[in-house]
Length: 123
Image (tube, rainbow, N blue to C red):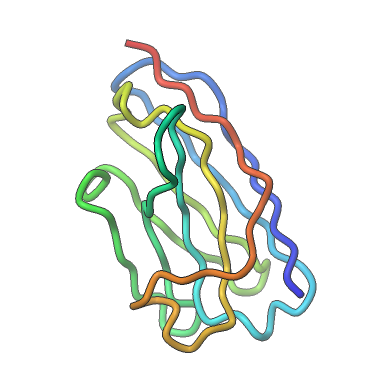
């Protein structure tokens, strides 16, 4: 099993920046990919960004491309999401996810989830 804990959420003005962190523990050696998902009030959870744990390949949703940057620190088993030029529509609970599936990076299917961290962007 893999345990995930997010941190770094908060309140920021439109145009501002925020950096989220996700610390992984447990059977982290089995991880193939980690990702960030987000869920706004009344909406379905949606994919935001992902990173391959072995080679660092990244994938972004069109809605965040060019504004968000996902990164990892393998030694610390930690993933980050640098969010710049934030918009009110970025307001959501952001969830860290991890997967032991070999095809997780391309299929966007994840097995382990964090508790979520709230990001609120004021207009």
